[in-house]
Length: 67
Length: 256
Image (cartoon, rainbow over all chains, first blue to last red):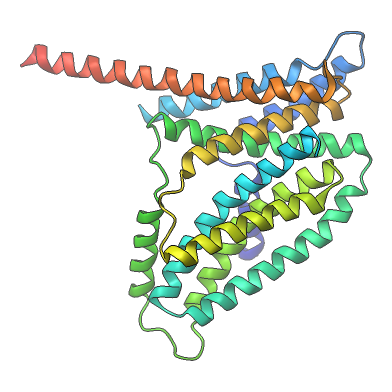
């Protein structure tokens, strides 16, 4: 049981990393891209904007914790 | 070689070189301190496990429909790339300690010596440490090789780039007989993080049904834009830290 738990903890650390909000944000941004792509509006800009926002929020959050 | 293929080869080579440098440090430390034989057996078994993983997961990934594959690969590359980039930004702005191979080497050697005298025939400590080090660093490489390779339907090129990086690092390590402390590891991680994020943006959006203006040429804008964003964040954080330092210094001076 402890090994299974350790494996899932490793998997979480490996894929999700230090900030789970980034992973969640990426999934949401991909969903929004798919929704916008289904309309007549161009959808390519959604991910770059989302990435800039997610990286900024994550880095700023870490910087605030440090200071 | 097309633009995306060149991007694939460069990204995989750089990412793999960084991971290989970190694995080499661990293997050198246990090899020199305890047992070369047991360490090299550990390396061999880890490489075998990684090769089996690549051979098993590669065909499974390439069998996915292209749009599903691009969304999955795009999401994973984005999550992974943003992790690398976040760490690289924090390190470059001085908010996180820089990764120092010399320091890591000294720490591994001290731990290996503290573990007691090695067994003359087979040393489980050396085996386990070398196996774990190569496996954990190698998993990141397998992930990058598979995601980039499967998406471009060129796992062979990705594997060749990874192999070339490992060979270059191992040969250099054997030549200098020391950890590769002079490799600009943090700069490389910065570049790899930007590449993974950029390809994640590109493939993720395409997989979700978006069309990039200029098709593949859009990557020529996305990669520099991502780098510029990351460098801009480093500059802002450094200025913020300098301003905070200056206000603390002026506060101390006015109190004195």
